[in-house]
Structures are given as C-alpha cells and as structure tokens.
Length: 267
Image (cartoon, rainbow, N blue to C red; front, side):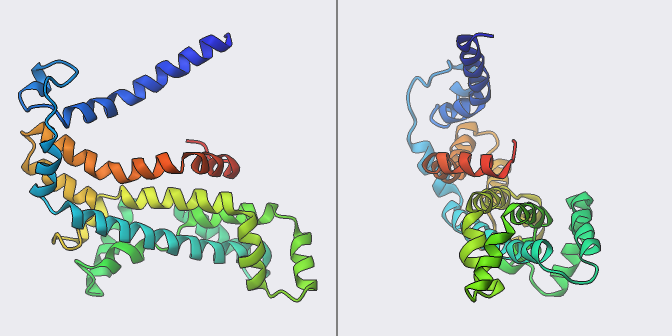
C-alpha cells in the first residue's frame, strides 16, 4: 500500500471513530425535535442546552467529587505501586517470588466478584456515602506493581551501586534516581489510573446514595434516567462530563503518547 493509501485509510478509520463524538457534540446544541428527524447540522444552535443541563443537576459537585477521588486514587496507586515494585525488583526477602505470583494472580479475579466483599467491608467500617469508600479500595494496583517492577528491573543496576557508593539510602535512590528515570512509565500508569477512576460507575453507584459524594458518571446516569426523553439535554450533560478529560488530553497529548510508547502499552 502506498503512503497516500495508508494516510487515506488512517483518515477514514479516524472519521469512523470520531462520528459518535461529533454526533453527540452536534446533538447537544440541537432543538429537541431535530435530533431524530432533522439534518446532521443544527438548524439553530441551542447554546442554552449546556446551561439547562448544568442547572438541572449538581454537576459542579459531581465534577469536584470525581476530580478529588481520581487525583487521590492516582496518587495512592503511584505511591503503593512504586514501593511494592521496588521491593520486588531490588530487594531480597523470603517468599518474594510466591508473593509476586499471588499479586499477579489477583489480576485474574473479575472485578464483579469483589463487589459484594468490598461492599460488606466498607459498610462494616461505616464508610457508605463517604470519600474513603470511593478511594481506599482502589489505592493499590497489581497491574501498577507489575508495570513498575518490569521498568525497575530494566534500569541498570550500576546506577544503584553508584548511588550506594555515594551514600544514598534505598529510599533516596528510589525517589531521586529510579522514579525520575522511569518517569514515562510512571506517567502512563498515572494517566490510566486517573481515567479508570474517572470513568468508574458501578462501585460509586453501589456505595453512594447522596449527591454530596456522587461522581460524574453516577450523576450522568441518574440525569439520563430522568431526562431520557430530552436527548439534547442528555447530550449536553454528557459533553459536560467528558469535557475535562478531553481538554486534559488535548493539552497533554504529546506527553500521553510518549508515556504510552515508552511503557510499551498498546491500546
């Protein structure tokens, strides 16, 4: 296939994947009667749909909750994964291989299987309708441990030996040398964790029943069930929910691509 053919194919595939997003964007500003029977382009732009959707539900609170939960969860996962990965990659202790195998084995457990045990645990702690219920169960990631362990093992051991000769402690070597060197992998893990937390629906729906702690996904689902007949309003609310992620991705697109490429991730 020629270069022109490859570019044309890439453009066609890109347009196919973008069509639902473009339709959602245009539908968010259409009059209600035009969504199904009107043309592809709005005959009259209804800019007030965004304001109406924003005022119909506490989306400001939902966005704040999701941002707080996602950032806290991401920071906790990066910290716990870095510490565990360093131990598995550089330290020697009894049953290390077995413990690492057990950690990887947890990746085989479907998340739905853990839903009831986690809910019972959270309820016994009295955490229902609280931020700890939305954050604590996800502060560790076996995938993050595996990803960082592989990156740490590929880092030349001579760097650690040189750091020890200079008097650096293991903690100093981890924070000042090992993590900065593996920043692309660390940032890729952070991005994936943030998106996973931001898009979570089932768990926040189970452990929250008050708007004070609901996330954007739960809020959008509740809003859609109430305003399902008003599709432009639902699409406007969806635009509000995905806008922060799209803006963040647009601003950090190059960083995201470099992080994923350096970590060897494929999506």
